[in-house]
Image 1 (tube, rainbow, N blue to C red):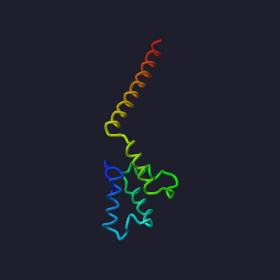
Image 2: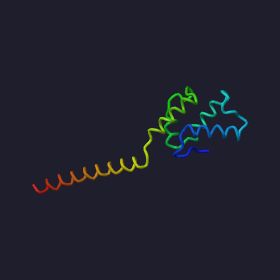
Image 3: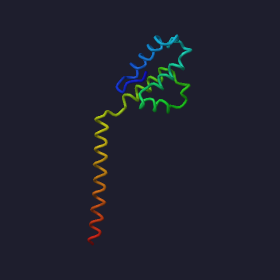
Image 4: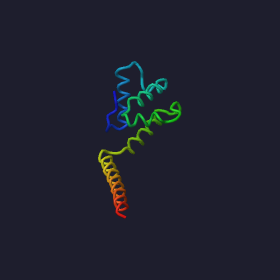
Length: 112
């Protein structure tokens, strides 16, 4: 089970817990299973969120609620496809403008 790109972390966690109930003999609410559920939550999160969650220091010190809070923060701060395209367009435009300025300066200096 992998988190969908547009699936919220809270919805994914509920789905993950339901899968634990259905397909394992373990209760995901059991404190003894907290580490397993937390690791499943991290490793099965969407790639962008998984990478950022893995970078958190001292993962052993995080409760499942702490991880959920971090994942929600990451989820809400992510770039939408439209924002990504706009950023790419803007960066490309800036690069082209810089190239044009360099070209103009070289052309002007060669005529002097």
